[in-house]
Structures are given as structure tokens and as C-alpha cells.
Image 1 (tube, rainbow, N blue to C red):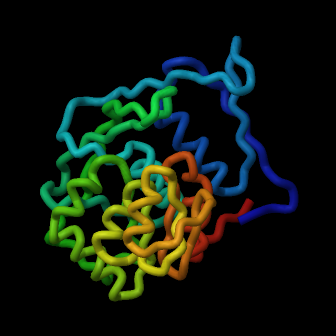
Image 2: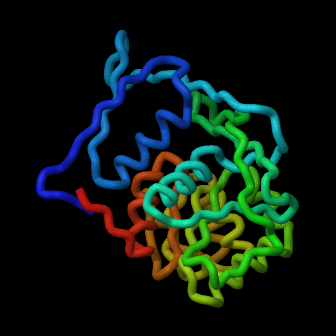
Length: 239
């Protein structure tokens, strides 16, 4: 991904702008190698803007908001067919997402995010129809590791030599499926112990691919994650 002269983009921001309408283009443009600057009247570099989530109430599963929505929309924008499934939900049902943000405490705060639509029924999934599996983080992996169907699905993707990508706490499901042993893994502080116990090798980087296994520290590394995943899928972006 690249061009003779690096492209750049400017985003005009302000408090209570729509969260997705800011975060998705911000991460995806960087994943394509575009430099993105954000400005806001009355704010200087390093200041923060508060975003707003506009959505209806739904079901409570608390997958990390950015870690499911940014890859879903980015891969769709690159021409991929993307399906989202959940063991206990039918096509058309919704999952509530969670937003985790560092706000000065020892752990990130957790707030409800956007609802996310399930696009396919679990029992209709044929692994041969897919080139990769993406496992976002948040709280949902804490539930998925206890679901035999979810763990078995991850193992089957691995057995068929498919690309498997885990973001943030998505590595919990990778560990439960026994896929981290001997693998280099990008991991934030909260997941380092899990990676080590599962036999993985912690790397001090935002995102790393070890063969067909891709891991990322979490949503702050989504540009690097999307870029690495696009490379593994042999997707080309030209400007």
C-alpha cells in the first residue's frame, strides 16, 4: 500500500461528534498509509474531544465497539464480504458493544457503545466460504471461551490453515483454542499474562503476524492491524 507522494487528510472535530463517523475514517485512512490530522477550534494538539454514541437499546454482549466495527467496515470497504456471527444470536439480532477508554484510573472505564447487527446464522456458517476469522476483544471473549461451539470454530479455522486475527482480549479465545503456543503475539498489559500462560511470546509492538496468526494490542492499533490483515489477504490499495 503506498504511492509516490504520501497522501494526507485533515479532519475537523468537535465535542460530541458522532463516534463512528470520526473513528472509522481516522483508523482506516491511516491503515491505507494516509497521514491524518485532527483539529478543533479552541483545542491544541494533545487535547481530547468527547464523542457521542447515537443508537437504540439492544442485547448485552459487550464486544469492544471499535474492534468489531472498524475491521467490519474497513474490510467491506476493501471489497470483502464480511459476516458477523454469535453462537446465541440469529441473523438480524443485535449485540451491544462496549467502549473502553483510559481516563486516568488503573483500568479503562467501560461504557455502552453502538449496537452491532449479526449478519449470518451460526449454524449456516461454512468455513470454506471464508478466507479469515477476526476475533475482536472487549468483554465478549470472556463469554465465548466458555462456549464449546465458539472454541471449536476457531480450531477448525486453524486446522484448515485460514488466517486468524485476534484484537485485544480476543486473544482469550485464541488461547482457549490452543493457538498461541510458540507464536509471537502483540499484547497490551492486560493480556500479557494470558499470552505467556498459553505459551505465546509477547512482542512489544502494536500488531504482529506470525504465519497466518495476526494479533494486535487493541483498538489504538487498528491502523496497523488493518494494514497487516490486508497484506495477509493480499488486498491491494492504489492511489
